[in-house]
Amino acid sequence: MPHPIAKRELMFSIRGTEKRTGITIHISAPFILQPGSVNFEFSGGTAGCTLQIDGLPEEFSHTAYGADSLQALQLASNPDRHLRYLRRKYDFYFPDGEPYFED
Picture 1: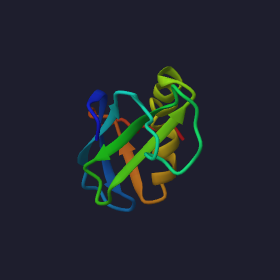
Picture 2: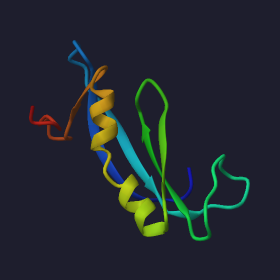
Picture 3: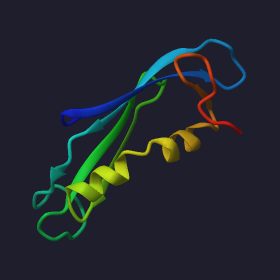
Picture 4: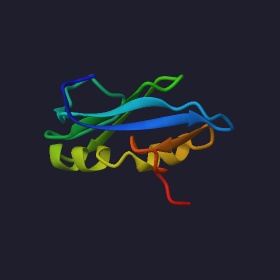
C-alpha cells in the first residue's frame, strides 16, 4: 500500500461467533495515475487513493479513482460502504465493544 495517511481501529467477529479480533483500516495518500498503470483512459491529474483493511481472514483492498487527488481521497475515506458489504460474513465493533452499525 502507498504511504497511509489515516487509519481506524475496529474489532470484528465472524457472524455467529463471539470471539472478537482487531482490524485496522488504512487510507493511503492520493497518488497521480501514470500512463499504463490502469486499464482505463484518464486525463492528466487523475488520482487514486487506496483503502485497505488489515486483520480480516481475507485480504481486502480497494482503490478509489477521482478526477484529482481531493476527489480520490474523498471517495476512499468512507469505509462504511465496504464494511456493509463485508457484514454478510462479519460483525464490526468499535474498540469499546459498541456495535459499529446501529441497525
